[in-house]
Length: 542
Image (cartoon, rainbow, N blue to C red; front, top):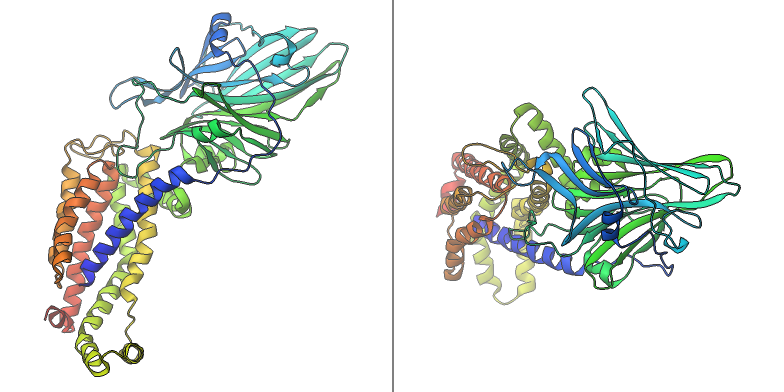
């Protein structure tokens, strides 16, 4: 009975988890909104810039950027080491500027005298460049792309600085004020995106039950290490948070863009939606910088455009690695991921690494599993004596309870011993679920045979069927089949239900559960053999 009860409890927690996860997506608490109004920053008419500016391309070993000299914004970005779809040969498109879809990274200088200040009565600056294409050469570790603009005796040089094998870009303004008056400027950076995706831009993730990959905005501040701010939040109320540390970002499954302002000055994080709610913007505005006449000042920020690679994100900014959304069990998921990555560095295959980490996790839980079965065995042996107590004390539940507990104490039996494994196992299950569903390292990563992508579902549904079969085998191997008719039917269909659940799960996740189930089968045989040696197993089956 204990094995079936455990399976039922796990199934209940499994379904409850996904119900709770769906509820959390719709009812997550909104961050506090301050009363400060956000100044309109820059020129919101992005299509005007396409007509007025010149397009230049910038390439490193991992990024290909399209920059418009009108405002000097990044209007397209391709990730050269990631394919759009498996075996397509086309680099993944993160940022884009299309008539039906905008996702761009804007930056500029606003404030009282900023050239991007819409209140100045002019449009944004049109920068000049020496070349139309900049490429990181072999053996070169840094590529500096200068864009220049001069007005009223003030020279502005906007640099995009790309680094080899890095998705963090330095965006730097060198301001040379040769006018007769001091100037007051503030740097801003913002990410703008069309809320509704066109049909020809597929979303990754979210195809399986509970795999609702978040697409929207997020930020980190002095008061919150990581807060999601969905497109619906942006539509409802404008974000306005003052902070000295942190970042703002746009997220999707596996990939992200983020602005990281200077961490030693005060910044205002803001958001807004267009009047028709078709586009959402999240950004930052730095504190005013006063540049005296005849002097030079440098203002800078970092722009992340790339995959959610945790170690690079962590190096770029504090808490930026939290955009790899492991949920509330991140403190378990992160160590498990680093362990998986460590194993992969030796094994060389992410699929086999999943198998190894499964053996490690289940091996660590083996003492608890053995204790659970022993506790189940002792509880079964005590059933005749408990039945006798029921007959003796009848309806006196208080006396019955006291005598039962005394019996447990006398025989050194913990009635909750069988639940301990479930209590410990569920957080591990959930953390592995988040980890294997969110790690970009598994995207388009082959395992063996027909599994070419561990982040995608099994194209032939073989792994889910193997998982369901192994679960059915575990039930059949249980020494104490259910006696309640309803429970018998439920157990009969449980394997089928779970198989259906797992049809759309990532192959890497299903692989973990197949190996885990096989490990359980072996564990059962070992534990039953130990119990048989002590004469307990035969007594349980009676």
